[in-house]
Amino acid sequence: MARISKTARRRIQRLLGLGLLAATLESTALPALAGDCPGNPDALGTSRTLVVDPREHPRIGTMQYQETLPLRDHEVVLTFDDGPLPPHSLRVLDILARECVKATFFTVGRMARDYPQHLRRVFAAGHSIGTHSQNHPLGMNRMPIERARQEIDDGIASATAALGDEAALAPFMRIPGLRRAQGIEDYLASRNIQLWSADFPADDWRPISAERVYQLAISRIEAKGKGILLLHDIQARTVAALPRILRTLKERGYRIVHVVPATANRPKTATEPQDWRMHPMPATVAAVSPSPAAQAPSPAEAGTLPAPVIPDSQPNQGQLVLPSEVFDRSQRFVRGLVPRLHDWAFWRRPSPLAPSERLFVPGQNFFTFGEKPAGPLLAAVPLQQPARPAVGTGHTIEDNEQPIPLDASTVKHTIPGSAPTLRSTFR
Image (cartoon, helix red, strand yellow):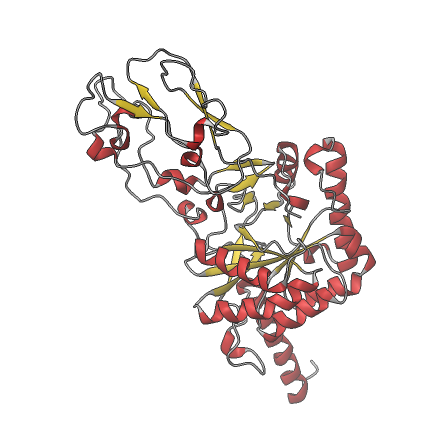
């Protein structure tokens, strides 16, 4: 048997060691810690890597769905849409590299086909790459499902061809404009592709300043305390705002999390179901029986209804959708226990009304939210007779409070001033 020289033996041991290290890196996906960032010891860095199984949580992002990534307080996931597009995408990569930050890029198939070398650079830098359709149509929710499927499949095929390795592409997708539809969601789930929405955007696709992009990103992150930030790597304003966004996140104690898909050699991160909620419900919730004997709460117990405001709401398919946590805070909307209007403290008077006492019709600004009204808010108020402005005064009924007797007839009065319906313009 031929003997192996010491030099050859050391070479074999070195190769085995490198193989073991590569396997370890694959299974653990070590983050780029701030202290290990070359040339920037004060870098933001990547605090940890989150490994997810798309099959278990097929749709994430509280802008549209109940679940989001299982992040801890003050953890943020950076995502970039629409690239690659030089020079902006390359500058975004340079900024992230200086801070040793890892992100997730949702590439458009046509862009991947036109700039394959730039997409390969995204992958070489250690970022995750998902897809964003082939041609970025903003009406995917209105397309025939066959055409929408073709957009999804072609986008995946183009990105895979550009990367040269099917395993380099993460099974993540974001729909252009966040225009979701049931057929699209079902198709992605059937292919075990995780559909990403977001928790907050920075509106950087709009013609706004870099300063405004920065303000929106930070204020919305601070409002929720954690979540998925939606940005675009094809915009000059994003390039200008990104360094300051990262510095502010560092100063305020936020940490960046990198998300990767689970594989045979990389098991998913252990989580609990409640971790996938933005604001998990308490472990124990008092059960209330909707029995016929249940009584409406007294005015003292009822308190006041939560008053959601426009910034707390989210647009979804052109409709105004209030986040679930707005209603969770009241914990009073239980079947059989919804109090009647006259049970609430702010509708009751300290003592019974005498027949001679009079109520007042609220002015127009009583029901407004600080936005331009889009339509009337209807409310029934008993009137003795239809209220009309005095002839020749030039005033409307909303200019003054109109006294109405309690024992009036049942004519209806319309109170204008409801909040508008917002249309989604996300790109």
